[in-house]
Image 1 (cartoon, rainbow, N blue to C red):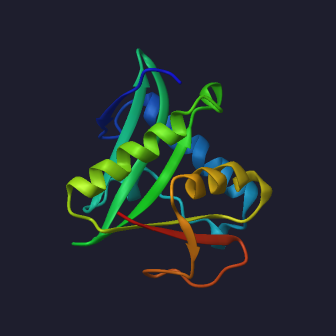
Image 2 (spheres, rainbow, N blue to C red):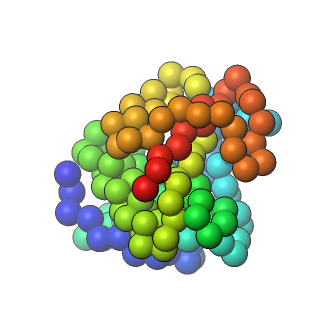
Amino acid sequence: MPDLTFRVDDLSSDATRALVAHHLVGMHASSPACSVHALDVDGLREPGVTFWSGWAGDDLVVIGALKQLDAENGELKSMRVADAFLGTGAGRAALRHITAEAEGRGIRTLWLETGTPDDFLAARRLYASEGFAECGPFADYVDDPFSVFMTKTL
């Protein structure tokens, strides 16, 4: 796994914006538009959303965000590993970083939505291996054949 430095990111760098765009292209390639819940740059800048980037030296490796739903609930959003770093453990490192940040804020439950197509299998396995369990829709989500909902008590 690369030695990563995580930082709160304002989404102003070309590298960060490009990885967010790449993430959105991938989501739209795997799911119908009405089933894509990934946030774009503007959505990731909304109040209540904290966005991190993980770097190995000058290389952007991974991105991810935490959306505060209320005082005790948070949602993992827009996690993506740069293609050159897939399979290196960077996704797990980002997930653990965001989880620790959520715990530090007093969040008691983390939620996430991911996809059902095979393109999302690695993500679903990662989340399950880190203690997330499938659940029903949460917040404003509704049942969707292209969505898997997961939760973890912190």
